[in-house]
Each structure stands twice: as structure tokens, then as C-alpha cells.
Length: 158
Image (tube, rainbow, N blue to C red):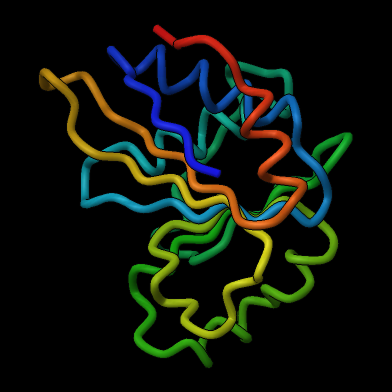
């Protein structure tokens, strides 16, 4: 299942992230695709803040730490940035298997996972939109649970 959403601005990205956070489940794996500056980290921050129900939640980028862990209720979130990794074997050092089974995993630069990518996951592709602030976000669901939840997303976002 695939769905494309046209986003007008940052608020639209935040709204879409909040909609996805509202249906979060332990074991969710969300793979964030897009070039530098497309808004992968902004989407992840908005997702975490929505799940925390705190628009001021501090959400630092895991660029240098590689992973940030948020012990949230009802589901914890592990935010990974794999940009600096060169081999999928390095991912094991981040205890990613624990995240896959115990939390929501938000993963930037998921191409570094290679064969470790779980079968059930949601790919989010962020591409330029019609103006500098706009984005086109394509959601590609793999696995029955993700397909049902993506099919349930209705309407456009700002």
C-alpha cells in the first residue's frame, strides 16, 4: 500500500507526524528517506513530541550519538541516525534488535541497515514540493498492520 501526501509547510509535516504517532505500536519500524535538508529529523522530532504529548519536548538529533532513546508512554521511541555508519554490522552495536522488539524505531538513512531491515516497516520518502517550504511525502507500507493503518489515514494535511 502506498499513499502520497502533499505538505504545504512545516506545520503540515508536524500534523502528518502526529497522525502517525497516534497509531504507534511497539515494534513499529519507520524508515526515513530523503536527501539532506528534506526534513527527516523534523518529521522525527514532531513524531516524538506528539507521542510525548509535549510540543516542547527536547528532541536532539542523534547525528553524533547515533541513537536517542525516549522512554515514553504508551510506547518508547528509539531515534536512529545511521548516516555515519558504513557497514550494517555496526548497527548491531546500537542494540537495534532491542528497539525492533520493544519500541518504535525511527531510522534516518535506513539504507545502512541493508539485510537487517525488518520485513514489516513503513518507508517515508520526503521529496521537494511545489515551493521551498512544501514537501511531497510518500508513505509505503510493508506488512499488514502498516497497510491497515496507512489506509486509515484520510484527508490532506496543511
